[in-house]
Amino acid sequence: MRLRWVVALAAGWLLVGCGGGGSLPGGDGPGPSGPGGDVGLPGEGGKNPNDNNPDESKTLWPLTTGSTWVYDIQDPVHGNFQKHVTVQGPREVPGAPAGTTGVLVHSRQDRVATGILYEEYSWQLEQSNGLVVRLREEDHRDGVQVRTTTWAPATVKSLARAPAALPWSFTSAVQELTVMGDGSKEDSDPTYTWRVQEVGVTVQTRAGTFTNAIKVRREKLTDAGEVKEGKERTYWLVPGVGKVREEGERTEDLASYDIKK
Image 1 (cartoon, rainbow, N blue to C red):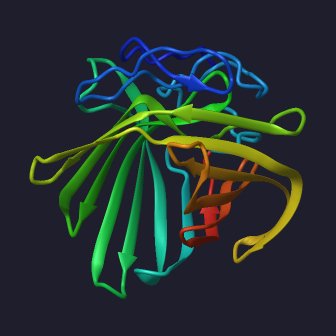
Image 2: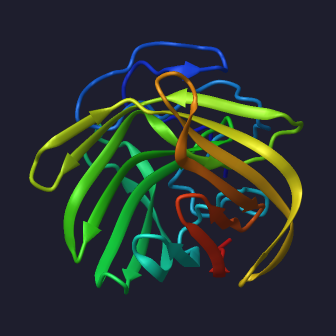
């Protein structure tokens, strides 16, 4: 069953370039669920994260419980290793108002070059406007939590649906709060632009060849509104599969996947 799902976290959000506006709320918990309203993507109604049996055959970012992906990583700092991603399912979001729920996604990276086991816990949500947002993220190294990041509003993670026509772009500004393992805090206000560059793209990966990928570029902007050098990322997203390749700060290539229905 599909429901129009809205996470009511706090008031206020800022949307740049697509209409709308407002203030950036403070606080240590997650911000609002993300940019609301029409952003130019086909709408099918939002998903209740507690609904464990949605139709994932068309989404560009499957979030069904038990789905897994394995990526081959080439990282200029940490070397070559694999990343294992698992959707653990609906969970309450720590630090958010009672009853606030997202889909918890866990990733494990055995960084063999540096001998570090890196794990990430990410609470995500597909919105009714076709965007997927992150509500909270926790980073662990060798089993110890070293960083927690929240955003106001919740920051865009990906697209769940492709636009009906090109060109398509979306720009949003967020307030980012990072709490380190020692309790120290870092505050920033990044701005990102997302662009769909092509549809129907053929991309080859170790998991196979996909002929219907959506090519998406994410750019981090400077205060002057220019693209920040070295902070561009390009994603290839496939309906019903999710991310099959990423290039930019590092390369991720899909090695295997298992999408649950």
